[in-house]
Structures are given as C-alpha cells and as structure tokens.
Image (tube, rainbow, N blue to C red; front, side):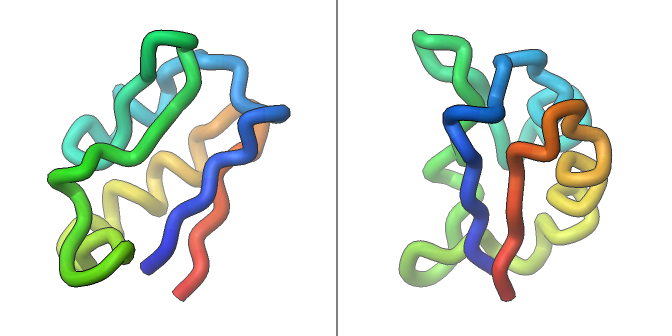
Length: 69
C-alpha cells in the first residue's frame, strides 16, 4: 500500500504517530512522515501494517493521510 500525507493539511498533532508508531513519526518540522522501516518491497508500506495505518487514517484530525492500494 502506498501512503501519502498532505503537508498542507498536516498540523503535526502526532495522532498518527500515537496510533501507528511502527509506521509514522513527526519530522523536525512537526510534519508526519512514514518511517523507512515500515516499507516493504519498493516504495510500498508493508501489508502487515495495514490495521495500524487504517487506525491512523481514521484518527487524523485533519484527514491528511491517504492510502492507495
């Protein structure tokens, strides 16, 4: 699955990081990013993280995270 985070919507609330700490973290500018270690083959996030990612998508207060299968 491919994850995108809209930097114009992300406010750095860290809800995604709290709900899916194996997938997301805040960078130095308090913007969410996908952890490199969450990736599987290619640029895709490993399928094993799907449940965590879905929680983060649903919990994002600004709806800044999208998932493409």
